[in-house]
Image 1: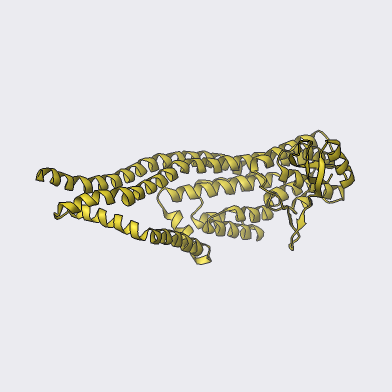
Image 2: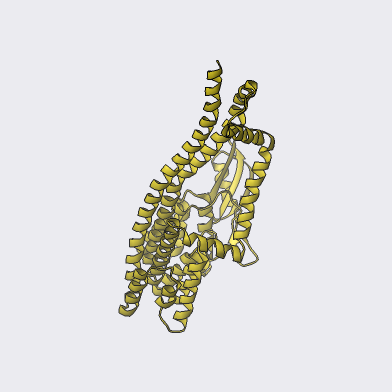
Length: 404
């Protein structure tokens, strides 16, 4: 059913804005009036097509991954209960709380009801359903195992979200400490040091180099604080602009892979993503060449992405998947060895699942270790900066006490 958004006034004169899911605008008006609301405006919320054939909704907010995973599980349950797709989509449209997702489901239901396949309808919403989702649903429809594929999709989506949340959570403390330290140091140099500097100047005595440096930094920040902001913003913008070029991206990703701890973590995250995604796609019936093309686009590091593309070309020519991965040097020998065993035994999907689970555990362990290393480093840097200021202030103060 179409979804109508309306605006009106209740009996107390309070403005009401909401949506209603009915079959026509006439029914919508009748329903709204039956609620005792004086209707001001009502219109149907429709998808607006883009030039590329895909569509997007002009709505506030977005569809969260958690909402998408829950909807996927519910859809799988309804289909498993032998409920027709159109009826299942209709039921979900009434149940979901996210307005954006409700509109998407309404559009899906309409297109499926008109004869389109579910996978084809999903492709019209690339901002909600990515290529993995669409290809797995298409494979599930073709093989008659749509409910199984949807359950795997929900598991896969939730696993990716958990990994991302753990990485984000691990970096929260160091980022907060860095921002707090930066703000605190600027407050000290801009507001505190100038007051102390007046005392030192009144002493009319040669100041130590550390104190002079501290006062110079304070004067510079007071006079040219805007220049510091311009330099920081300009540097971030310039680096980001350069990284977005082909050459810059290649150099940046190459540097990341060579870093002592972070490089290993980058490799692990991409290897885990490669194995889990490829295994999920193959297990859902997606052809291996299509699966490799999808996986390649999910790998963030361009050098590892090139290795996956070479592996796809190798498979298309009838050769092994592991050759290019091993030659790149970015995929550990244990990973390529297990993939080779999976290819030879015809058990590639289970082998990829074992690798991805193993590497997910290693990634979590590495993130915890990295966090435990970053925390003392941040504390030492912050303590060193504060020690520098204290040292610069205490030495002249001691001289002042000796004069007295």
